[in-house]
Length: 350
Length: 194
Image (tube, rainbow over all chains, first blue to last red; front, side):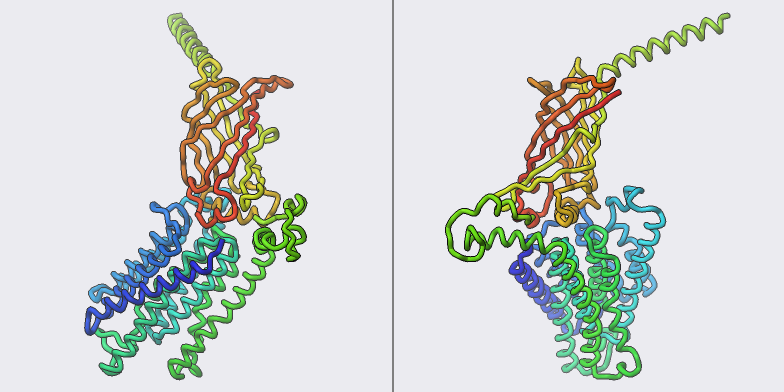
């Protein structure tokens, strides 16, 4: 059963842990390099997510057995490792993108490993497999590539916030489709990602105030405040949660694609009319644009939940809560009598 | 002539070997699980006040019975987890999801015997039970085993009940919630052989 209090605790723990770690790591160096900043953010997001998962007491099997296990223990760590390697100044950009493309190509196969999709020829024909993998690669590549490019062109806190919004919506959609654990796993990730992004943004603004506005290749400022690792974790996390929600849960394909592509609406602010607005205006427009499809998909997910799954939960609640009131008519008349057997038989809750 | 003699001897030898092999094979009768006259059903506590009943509609398996040496008998059963049926479509869909059976990842529930011991009125069968990707050794007490010949089709039936804890098979603790951890499984299977 969902436990909102536990989720709040897990989110808070993940956010605090990630913020504290990134503060300490960035505090260790007076003027951190881009590689150091990237590594610090990666460590903070990973540690914050782990703390949150620990508070949630979410079981993650190792060796990984399910799609979610593989997302948390293989795919996301691989993304962190790749971004850590890619941040090395000595490494060619092409090599970094080679690693990223490798992860893009492998991620769907890793997440489906051992499932009926790859082990049972009756579950998927060759054509279905080819189309599904092709769509997944295109989605992941376009989302990662475009968000990365936007982050390089015009970085800002709105990019990780957009990704955080999308992952949060994906988590809620997956949960409302009946896959509770899939959504729960994403919550600490969102909290850690957002906390890290906010701390880095805040520190960069403070440093800019101290050291001036000039962008530097060595010392990150507000002009280069968006470490690529935050985009990588955000995009891979978003894709992964939606992927397992669709292929292992009951999130529809259209809804998953809509949520996955929603952060790309940040690109709308690159049109000439909006491009030269103040940063906070651009950021607000980006968040509002991204929120529109997310709100629509959430509303649709809620409608489906109310239709399909809520009746199970509602009947359950009737059984547990209303019996503590009236045990005969369920209307609070206060009678202490035991309900007739017909009333007991009427409970359909799962 | 010599060639013919050699062929005859070879043929006789081969025949003797195949007859000997045939004897050892026929000692264990192999039965196919008859889905029409069998069922795998379960029930689990709901809120600790009532029971939820369900069944699996797609089950297959074989068992070989060696009447002379029962320890050589084998039993195997494969249940398609996707075929779960609790008479509520929404609940069935929910039970197929990763919080419960995760049928896309773990499509089958399987039992493979590792040792068989005859007991009064049946067999005590120990084997590997795999559910939700986790394998544990369990012991089933199969009652029955008498052969019945009906219209030239031989039938043998067994019944057993067992209690399994879902937490022993890697089910998420939070998904156990209002449904009890322990599920009672009732297996009534009829095997057929021509």
